[in-house]
Image (tube, rainbow, N blue to C red; front, side, top):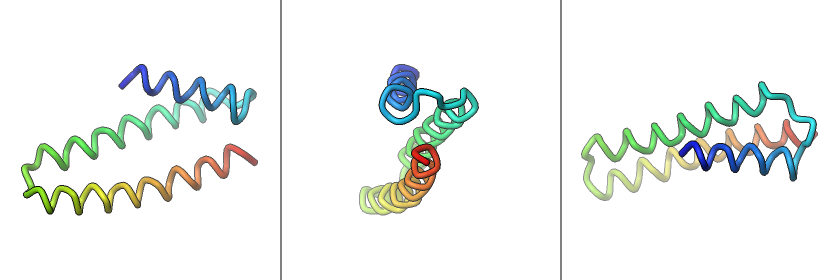
Length: 76
């Protein structure tokens, strides 16, 4: 997971905003870690396959909206 976070932060600096603050990059790290934890929690809860898929889709939609908002802020 740390490697993916590092690559994402590098990608943002190289392709979106070379002057992005460390605080914003730390926020990306925090959000990525929490997103992974949320997915893990759903799987560990032991829901049925259909429930797991439903929860993962709902969580994915929720998280996607947040990432869109965040990246719209970064690109300004």
